[in-house]
Amino acid sequence: MEAPTVDADGTAITKRWLALTSAWTEGPRWRRILAELAIVTVDLALATLVGAALDRLGLGADAIVIVYVLAVQVVSLATASHVVCGVATALSVALFCFFFTEPRYRLVAWGSQYPGTFAVMCVVALVSSMISMRLRRNARESQAASHMMRVLLQTNHALQRCDSVQSVMGEAGRQLARLVSGTVVLYLPNASGLLEPGALFLPDGTDAPLPDAGALDGTGVIAGPRAPRQPNVPIEVTVAMRAFENGEPAGNGTSLFSSASGFYLPVGEKDGPLGVFAVLGPGEPLSQGERDMARAVAGETSLALGRELAAQKREQAMVLAKNEQLRANLLRSISHDLRTPLTSIGGAADVLLEADDPAPATAPTPAPTAPAAPALAPERRIQLERSIRDDARWLAATVENLLAMTRLTGEGVHLTRTLELMDDVVEEALRHVDPKVAEHALSAEPSRGLCLVSVDARLMVQVLVNLVNNAVKYTPAGSRITVRVERHAPAAKPGEAPGQAPASGEKDVVTTSVTDDGPGIAPADRDRVFDTFYTVGRGLADGRRSFGLGLALCKSIVEAHGGTIRLEPNRADGHGCVFSFDLPACDLESDLGGGSLPDE
Image (tube, rainbow, N blue to C red; front, side, top):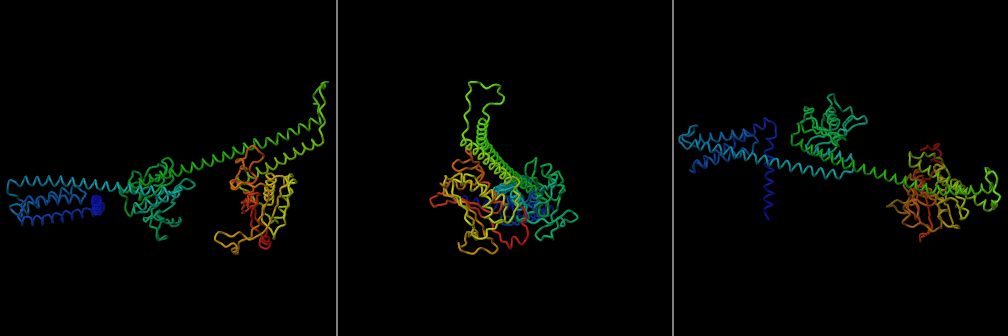
């Protein structure tokens, strides 16, 4: 059970050792040379002192040779050059010969055994040092691979939480800045296809605001004093454009613009990158390992961007498919619903024509045996004429709804607002409702309060006509239909007491409702009655005289006026319907005194 602890401790020691040696092996050349000379000097001095102690104890030359071989191994573990290990091996042999062979303190050894000892000592020291250096290199490569995998895993998790192309690019820029402890500039194409700085990421992983064009000095550098948290950042648009056009990295460490200050990585598809990251090290060029990790992060970013773009394309495809389905439903409804009244009108017209002219004018001589067509009864004639009129009215109303819906869902509706009393709008609408309303008990109650609204009167009349016609169509003869208009304070918001006064400046609301006592609408259909092409009890409109456009058009018109529309049952048992819509109320002093209302 203790093995994991030992392994963890060993891994921690290895990491500390690699971090310590990296302090001088990856620094400037002059610092690395001085550090290696100091290591060799101190290491061999200590080995000599230990050898002197062993010689005084009388342990012999073999023990001292082992000490020097161990010292050479320590040098190989602490340095990164074979030359240094060779120098340490030669110095260890010379020191052994100078201090511990006869005659002492001279580079001369008397005795036939010393040449073999020196040779074995050199071979053992060199071989062991080479093995130690290989182990050190393998440990560093393993640590670098582990670090890269950890960085890629963190980047992948961070990118998976992004839900847009912009968030993916931003998260990737922050990851790169933290990775190299430097500054990252994101270049994005403008409307003309040229790159320009679009975002700046600092070493701590935060974003910094980009300055305006005036913050660029004469050398193309973003000057830091205008933003205290912003370092001086070189702007190399030419290098970024080359990486963007080629789809390959450019800048420092590459064959393209190798003298550039940063390492430029395009992200996105190779044939069409979405941007370029300029990775700038902290005062010095990036190392090969940092460039490899930056490439890996850019690769993960490109994959994430590909997934996000694919998701957007799927969403667009779904929207197109839905639009095609709506279009197909509309065509199916038109083919059924328009054909029925047109056929009825054509048949009624044929009957009336035959009654008025039973014998075709082109017939040369009527057959003597042909019976005379019976005269058309007045009641039958009136019935056919009313049928033609009703079908023509229905077709006109349907075409008007279709045109209005097309305007509202296309380029948007142009509202010609005027101040109107809602009672006048109701009175005008009741003049244009379905004549079958005579079979019902229709009433309009006087308004409560000054119900003045800013509306497009023509469209608001259409809303009321559709609501009343809907009640006429779906309630049995003799049903009661009531239109009410009232002005009241806005409903209490969540968290407010029901009787609490509205906030200052919040306008009253004018509510118009159309109530019937018919069979009502099932709860499952109440949430969908305002959907386009949806009819109660039939889902998508089909096979009957209803496009499912009337209520959808009402919702679009009311919302275009900044209002809301809803459906509620008339009674607790679910019978009857109350269609209500709210509009912001207006006052004569504030809304009429300022002049005419602007169109929208």
